[in-house]
Length: 313
Image (cartoon, rainbow, N blue to C red):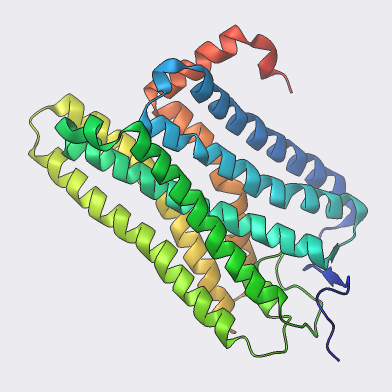
C-alpha cells in the first residue's frame, strides 16, 4: 500500500543500539561536542569579521566554511540528542526531508568552498603578480554567490524529484535522513532520481576533485622550482592542511555513497562513514585552520583578549 509523502507520515531512523546505562553519558558527550563545534566555528567567523587584516580573499572564502559547518552540525546534532534522551527514533517526514536537505547543502558547500580556496592558493602561489588583478572583490563576490547558488539549485532539484514520489516503507536505514536512504523507502521507479544523483556526483564531487588535483599539481611544481625555502615551507604547510581537510571529506562522502549502492556493504561501516562526515569536519576545521594559519590564530587570540567573556559557554 502506497503512502503519500505529503500525508504527514512518521519515519523511523535506524536504532542507536545504546544500553540504558549509556544514554546520559552519550547525551552529555554529544551535547558538549555540539557546543564545541558551534563555539569554535562562531569564534573563527567572528575573528575574520572583526579583524580588518583578515579581509583578504583567502579568509573571506574561509568565512563560508564555519557557516556551512554550523549548518551541518545543527541539522544533525539536535535531532540526534533529542532521540537519545527520549529513546525515540521517530521523525516526521517533513522534518526528515529538511534534515536531509540541510545535510546535503552542508556537504556540497564544503566541497565547493574548499575548491574555491584551492583556486585562491593556486593564484597566490603560482601567479602572485596577477593575484590582486584576478582575485578582486567583484570576482570574490561572484565566486561566493556561484557556490551557494549552484549548491541550492542542485539540492532543491534533487529533493523536488524525491518528494514527488510515493513511499511504501518507513524504516530509514541510516542514523540520520539523507537522499539515498530516503530513496530506499520509495516503491516507484527512481531511474530519474538515480541518473540525476549520478550526474550531480560527477559534476560537484568530480569537478571539485579535478580543481584540487590541477591546482595542487601546479602549486607543487611551483614550490619545487622556487629557491625561497621559507616561502616554499609556508605554502606547503598551508596547502597540506587544506588538502587533508578536503581528502577526508571527499573520501568519506564517496565511500558512503558507494556503500549505499552496494547491497552487500556493511551498514555499520556505511553509518560510521556517514556520521564521521557530520562530526569531524565541523569539529576539526576551525581547530586546524585556527592553529595552522598564523594570521587567523593571532586574530583569534586578539579577539578572545578583547572579549574575555566569549570564552565562556
